[in-house]
Amino acid sequence: MPTITLIESNGTEHMLTGQNGQSIMQAALNAMIPGIQGDCGGACSCATCHAFVDENWVSVLPKMEDTESDMLDFASERQDNSRLTCQLTLDESMDGMVLRLPESQY
Amino acid sequence: MSLSSVTIVGAGQAGFQVAASLRQGGFEGKISLIGDEPDLPYQRPPLSKAYMLGKIKRENLAFRPETFFQEQNIELIHDTAVEIDRQNRRVVLKNGEACDYEHLVLATGAHNRPLALPGEDLNGVFGIKTLADADALSPAVKTARNVVVIGAGFIGLEFAAIAVQSANVHVIDMGQRAMARAISQEMSEVFEDTHRECGVTFHFNQGVNRLVGNQGKVTGVEKADGETLEADLVVYGIGVIPNITLASEAGLHIENGIKVDSDLLTNDPQISAIGDVACFPCVHNEGQPTRIESVPNAMDQARAVAARLLGNPSPFTSVPWFWTDQGSLKLQIAGLSTGFDTTVTLGAPESRQFSVLCFRKGHFVAVEACNRPGDHLAGKKILARPPELTSTEASAEGFDLREWEKEHRG
Image (cartoon, helix red, strand yellow):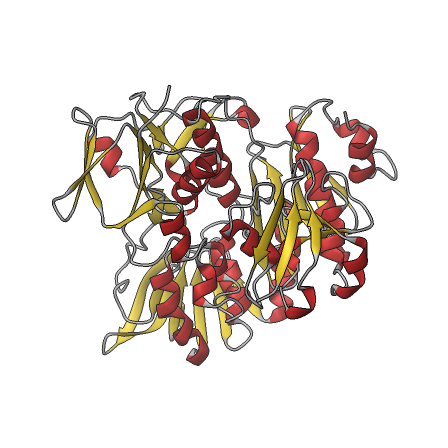
């Protein structure tokens, strides 16, 4: 069960323990972490589960598919380290990872 | 104003989201969520898609695990609400008990329009609305050889795209083209072509006389033209009917669903209605009473009601949006294209990566994006606020919706 840290735009930190195989989006929703919306339930259709991956962890993650990248172009404040958390499936390699959340998902 | 208790009837997407948003917003009163299905509240969209393919497991359909409801102190009542006693502000349950409310949210959803045809009760005939429906249908798909889908809407075609991977599939529809009520002709054509390439046969402008069977099991579908298509599995998706009985018997105004104002309140200020069952004045449809069947609408309305109950009211103005995944095609629609008169196509339809912009009386009203998620999100943002995109601008050589949105971002 990997534990990651999510940091809201106001600086509030949340330690989040999820199950292997679960998306970070779902784990964040289960823990009621503010700032992750997940409007489409994880179908990569809405870009409301956007997060910035700490630079040291970007290379650990699987490469993003075109759909995710296209969606992110219109997420608020896209950066090089932006990802949609519905497309990130938790595994042990992510234990200790840090993600920052944008001010708004819309 | 500080509420002590909120009762929600309907534990689908809308009802569940009200409970979650209330707690997320710091609501400390009692929350009762009444649902008439046995499972934890769950997502419906995967039922006709990923769940049918076995890509999503049953336990992952739940919005949240059981512990969430305990930790958040959300009382989940698995029973049917049979009466709203407005005088005494309580909801009577089938088991005879009652649930008091200070504010009541009706999120009763909709049920499948029945086939209403001879033979509809034969074994092997399915609708897809609930998890129980999907669980019954899923094993039948694996063994079916000849599948007939009645209704070429989102649900029927999502299912056809899955069934055609292992069976012969015929799709029958009364209309002239695929998803005719929801999308433009240009978009319909691409979806039809893609389904045909996968092996689906369409029968448009065609009604159904009856389902035929042998020893209680469906064996065929007799079309209005007299031809009988062989079938060992029939799935229908011919629209839904809002679940209004509870509201109507309680004297709430009904108009194509439960009628609400721009705050999503019924004619009883202690009762809101949201989601598939609610008919509201939609600013994206010229203020006309509008009922929208979609997950994003359910979530947005749930959040709006939760915000109001927490003391932050604002009229509901979210841009409606929809999506469907059919085989290799992902269609995302933002806005309501009702009554559009002009379209502008961006990209080449043959590439299956293109968008159709819909205009009504010169106003940009909707974007249909096929495998172009950037256009979807750009269009959704443009529809949400000024400046308005004109069809003249959109028709210009080399027009790029995403670039336009970026240039006109406030």
